Amino acid sequence: MHVITSFDDLEPVPWANGAGETTELVSLIQSQALTPNLRRWRLSIARLDRPAAFSPLPGLARTFLPIGAEVALEIDGQVHSVTPAAPVKFRGEQNVSLSSLEEPCFALNLMVETDDQATSEQNALQMATQFTGSALFAVTLESGPGYPKFQLLELEQTDVLPDHLGVAILH
Image (cartoon, rainbow, N blue to C red; front, top):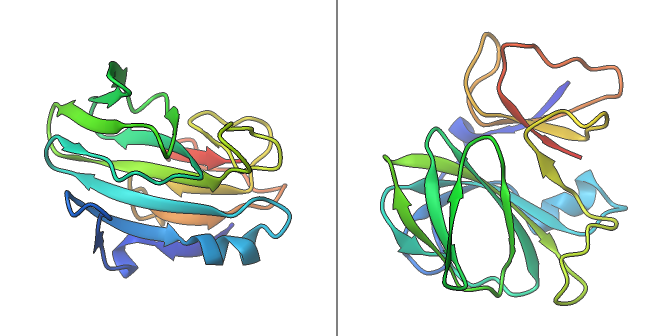
């Protein structure tokens, strides 16, 4: 495993709409060097302190995973309960807001450029909370011996992730 970046080494920036802050682990530009054969993507950790609207990001397919608490997202007027066990997907042009949260927490956000309005998964990076048999990257969701929280790891085919380490898999 190769460490690409760590949350602790980066500075947060305000959301595009100013309603919160995020720490970018990988930018759209940086993703081109990491995965030249895939669509450009962005990976960030958002701090969720209170209900707020999401910034509209047309042209991006978004995958959102709360970390540490269950939250409710309102997507185009429909409320969805989102747990740390299962990410939710939506398009960047949809009207999305964090409508409630049990307590302040974080969220992992994967945003992938799309060719059109569809969120086609062909030739695009995907996020899962369970190992899918193949993986390019892993994000630590909690700290463990030798692994700080929110560290982005590049994986080799022979790498084995420690059982005690909670991770999101990017494949």
